Image (cartoon, rainbow, N blue to C red; front, side, top):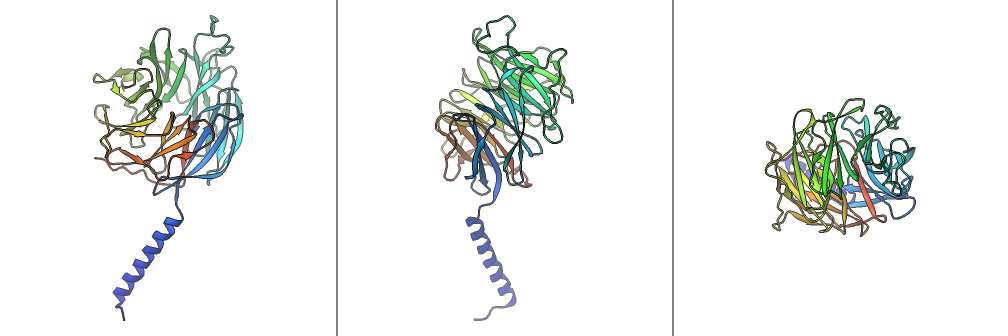
Length: 403
């Protein structure tokens, strides 16, 4: 049987496509590297995973490494994806790891907190990649044993400049202090993408009130108190995030099972949306906003679930993103305490589940924001995973399909 030249070309093309599909199926393409920090062991441990581009499935890469300190609780990635920072709570250390092109981590520098406060609870980096914000539970000289002292009246926000090599410099000074005071029990920190303001959540159990402390920020990291700060934030605000446009800020209220939404007004003032707060699952904790700035995902610790929301761009109002089962919630492992959207493709959502030592993965529908379970999950991790971070592998475009 003979083929025309056109038929021969078509046949060769078809065979090539089949071979390419087979090769891809047998050799998954890594789109991201995901890092999870567990604090069951001492020192803490960091585990690295590869993310499959097609399915979002995770596979372990290499061996676990030390977090460089005791009880890692938070991680942050530099905006050039070359450095990972880990906050270890029990020994008040910040550890810088360099990230290779293959996703491998190498410990580079350790900063021990002292005059900046102690017992870190959360860290994050500004969008410019020049400042690392650190929230400490206690101010210098204070601890669990001294919190009744008159000088121990809250937490501390420290700002560290970041060098071109990723190393942390000396904390930005606030007059005679190396930190900015915030309320007792600080829980989260979030800078606006435009660099004009940074916000810290905290709560006072005695008064039964939660707050958001707001600061203006210079490019060098010096802060100034925003008028009207602190702003009321339910009873126990835990997670905080803002949109890439710097127009809206969202806070989870762990005690009242609500999402509080704010508009960002002039000079960084926060104004609650008049149609909020919005219902979440039970004990909402961590929150993330996808790279497109149109979807919100919240981990609910008591429900073992993720709630999904779509943001109405003109108003900032979140509405439930209902999946094919008619629900806006998606089941995770036990006690999800951290959450992220993958930075390489913007198509996968992952939670670190503290009590069952796992990561849950979901495929994100970029047109609707709904989630579906990722292949072969949940994925076993190091003990008591408390923090999660990710970097893209190579250069990719975030899918921007919108309804």
